[in-house]
Image 1 (tube, one colour):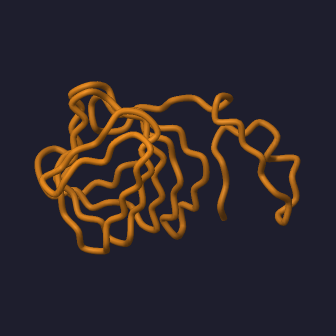
Image 2: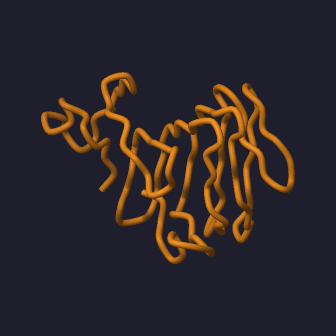
Length: 132
């Protein structure tokens, strides 16, 4: 079942009611990648569906990973870079199922990302783990 962690009024809502979320009210949580924090706006742990804000500190790196399903990211501030290009503030990038890359943010970034399934990490300490 989909939910928004830390949404204070969610327990009072019926299953068919809309969830109005103020991201400012949600806590930033560290991810397994140093320098990258997240706010989960909506998740369904059973299916893997996830919508989240990610805050990248300058110089943060997301280890080489594979997108198990389509991933979409809208860059709100800063930029994210990989071997295929750079997504600047105000730009949108989506990656097809099976895409593999190492992402970094030299100057820092704030991004809104949508996942149908968690990433599969390929290298280092995160290998085999999901970013969540």
